[in-house]
Length: 412
Image 1 (tube, rainbow, N blue to C red):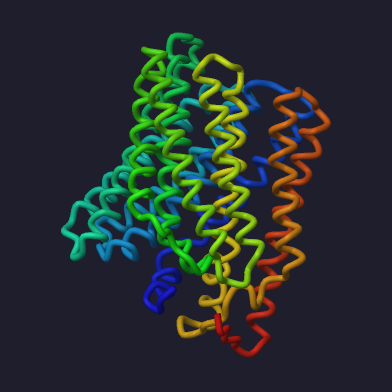
Image 2 (tube, one colour):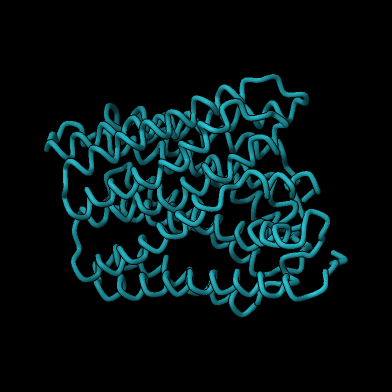
């Protein structure tokens, strides 16, 4: 990561929304425990939105405040509005979760409305930024991709507001939009964003990059168009839904082969991050298989959501946290010129414990849902909270190590 990028990290990424994302991750695993004691559709929906919105989307919007200028060389137009929108999002999510878990219709509709306004405002100023002329072709392509991803988030918010109204009013006709909402939010927004950004981040994390850029482009296009076509067909045409899901699955397989090849050729001395990435890619393939089965009426939609959110997207976020997140902590303390590598300051036992407990949590939730075993949810939620505790302890260890030690310069 270059010096200018490190400086941008310190300037752009707001700490409070990222801390809120951590809180929502805690809430998510606590909801898994609660579901083990008292399963209900409301708690399940609260978990989905705590993870998809509170943990993953809030983190993504916070980091995009940095990614947009750093990756495109475009200066934000409407920075204050974007930051204000990110600050408002947690309040909308809290209302939404309260509405689902406690069945409070007014809170549900209010939360959906707040989220729609905040996300629409963020998208408006982001689009105004991204349509500016980029100096290089690569930067222009990144700007277009980010604009499209944020458009999918906005479309998801529109469907979410409609579903919240239908859920609160008891209008069952609107429930048919739920598969489209999931395909756009988890697929066209989070999956396409993560697969696209990883092209830029694999190099510092793994010390290798894709050998097949054309394959990545084909895979990314298949993912995006597949999810969009599937979302359009879900409420109207089963064949269109299935075609879209199969097309997205082809994109997922192409991305997985490419990503696992990068992991195989990794040169950085940081095996846990390779494990995080490899496991996340594995969960992407499981999620794709479950989604295909669900499109042919198999009752696997819930398993697809768990695999995609907790296993795939959550796993990739944690992989990035254990490299790029640590670099942020280091540069905040030592400055932009410091070249200490994450593996020099992370506690490997805590890192491996976070990985093992995190995988236990995802598998426990996945198997608990598939076999309807309450004890598995209790174990999964506990493992998820323990994994998060290891991550927090590791961050504290990194801060202490960086503050007291002389700068460490890695030769890798």
